[in-house]
Image 1 (tube, each protein chain N blue to C red):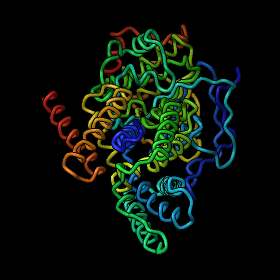
Image 2 (tube, rainbow over the protein chains, first blue to last red):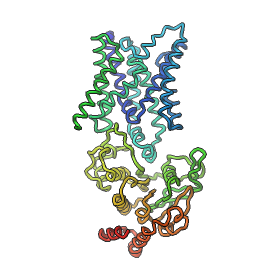
Image 3 (cartoon, rainbow over the protein chains, first blue to last red):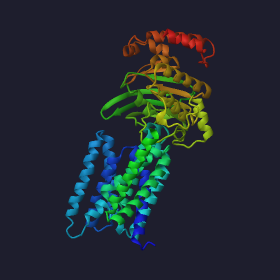
Image 4 (cartoon, rainbow over the protein chains, first blue to last red):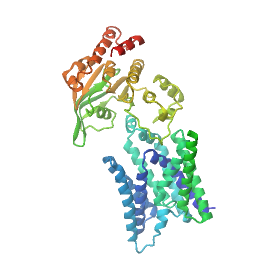
Length: 263
Length: 257
């Protein structure tokens, strides 16, 4: 079954969507979209470094994404003009990554594959990494769910209950770096944030609790991954962008339905 | 009786700025203590240090072992993207049974709101839900940081009566920070006036007559404090535990104010 590249692609898309869903909810609730961008763009630099030093691309992307996440967390805790700072970091990381990749003269690097994903070329080993990463993220988020929700609502409320909001933020940063490293093969560094926030935002109008929002987001993300793949095969469009376009269509539909229900 | 929380020579700094220095503070079981002070006087920083959210630059904070604190934050800004029913909120961070949730809501005067979204509650209801959540752990100490900032005066007065009832029923100590001087002081056993350090401290009557307090808050509160004296004169003779006033009498007092 795994010999079929479409089956592997579908499984890869579902794994990435599953990991992205609960984390994407936190990205939306905590207004961390730019944070997601900075982390994801940094992964390109990680890819370039990994190829230069002949280590695994997953490891390189994970390490640099994690470093970027930690740097941004520390800087934005100190400085309240976080929006500008994050914009600078997000786009600089991308630019520096692309420049670094251009220095790799002795390695052939298909930049488009890392920028927009290459889900149709997912190998069995990639699948193992994607599902392993997804399982790790789901365990982390599941384990810290109550504490992270409390810290998201109000840091002082968390403190009074013996929860350290900074610790929860660090765990969130770690989980985000894993999702970036996992999803880079699926939708590419440029569209990872979309995979995080669009399913979560689409789920919002129909959710009454944080848990239903995360579950709905997972369902919407998986549906978008499958629909995007199908469209990609039928119309010969790039797979990563097709998945995000399918998610965007879902968002439009859910926003319209939400408005109708309220109105 | 030993203190629930104590600070010794506590000094708090943000960067180079000292917001609070040399504070010796203690609250004992069952006490109602109010911290008053102008904006930027370090009231909220003191609260944060007491719950462990702010590290002392000098001095120390000592809590009784296993102390259960119920915390009602100044305000809770709910992001519109976060769906949250009242019932779900009560289970953060510790999951509670439906029965415990119902009891806490009833106790805080917010019965029947369980299935509502937090975002749709009125200001007064929201504060009651925050109080209900704080009561779930059967706190020995209830900390309220400007808990009535968003309420009008009758709303704030009703909320403080509720706090007094809770103290009366559960015996928990209450520590409040407030701007609503006349309302909040009348319910307090002890008042601490803060302005970067402890200016003065004592019974509401002592503090309200202290020159430093007058200097900070002006003479404008005199009428209300006269009301305060009247308020306390009659039940201090009798049962000191009881803060229950007949409803009609309460209205009369408010009319005087």
